Length: 346
Length: 255
Image 1 (cartoon, each protein chain N blue to C red):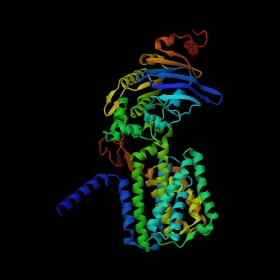
Image 2 (cartoon, one colour):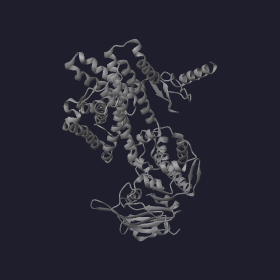
Image 3 (cartoon, rainbow over the protein chains, first blue to last red):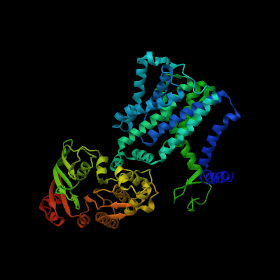
Image 4 (cartoon, one colour):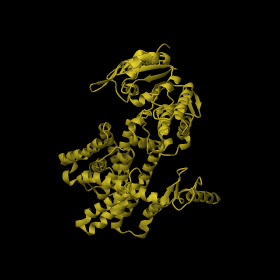
């Protein structure tokens, strides 16, 4: 008991020193806790359904940020990974009877393979050219899907898949926990040395090469990592909706991901995740005025981007936290001196 | 041994109709500091970029320690031990200065050579200390002055612990005091030794520069280029007296 108490106290000290000092960290912890304990308060199936879909799309938006935000490889065809993950999981489930827990990771791996295949020709391209080329790939796959309706179901898609878990609550906990886990992994990747190289490639690729780094390898790594996470989210989506259809590959799907990421703030990981949890329920809420729905959606996004060009969450973070001019540690905006080096904050 | 450290033969590179490098060939030894001068557009920077494979030569041969390096990728060449700096500095502007150097420290060559150094940050810090900008390690690279950016370029190159260092206008845009400091750093580096956790064997160097006075003090030998060809090659004192060189710089009748 004594030992347990000791560790509990240590844990609390770390929690107090590392988490409770910054409002952004408190918000993240609260967000996770609310998501995890929400079913205790309400089990409204419609609300749970929205949050499940938001969790799935949050993984997708964060994976776009990992590739296009951090590495700067503008991908306007992110639906490709999503669709490949969805179709792989769906076809494996329907024809080979592989259960969701096997099919979804395999969908992720199929998306990695796709990432490698499209990554190789895309490595030679930069900026606009890369964006336009990546835009084409989901359309090509869409053509293939329509060309072999015997296997892919054509316009109707592959339906009648196994349920994710069997109950709405099970689905909810699976997707939310996976979302928290995978997004934390993505955030850790961007925080590591690999993430540093991704970031440097975005800044100046030639200079990274001249530093002795094999940029081809790292760009392919970015393509496959991003593909893996997007493929997982595609597989989750297919099994949750119990259908993988051509709408997963549409251009609007690719652009919605970009809108989420830009709205929340790219090169952050947490930005796109937060954006999905705001924009996706917002779009659902606007179903009350169906004819103005997309118009209001566009106005909200334009206003945000007009006043917060870096995205919503970096803007908020900048308002509530200041960076110490000396040690570059973040402090809550109300502090007069830095919590680490006690330098004056302005 | 017998084989030269760096050997270049019949190197050619054209940009459209312009022959930027025209049948250039020279060799250099392990302990040399080689200056490379010439009027604007003479092909000096192009030669450096050909050596590091940032540009591909049309034809010709580049051998480093007897190994043909034409056709290798830039990162392979850096990992063989050739590092370069850029004339128009190319820092990662939105990253802190220390992160700029950490990228070099993460290259396979630097990782292998510094096996006993666990922390990449520590090694990057030593490179910054050598270059004299360690006090600004946490600032964003975009806040640096021209002179400090030059130092950052040097720190990045030194962090890979090269055997051949290609410096492209290390004194460009620097004040006289900064120039002296940089020249001292270069000489100190050439002598070799240990700078914190960084180990330098005293790299050979090729320095492209316009500020001749400073360059003369630190180089052993100078190559003069004009219109992509070598017009003089020798000790600094001889080269400045060469008639062709004076003509290239001042025009005919200038002497």
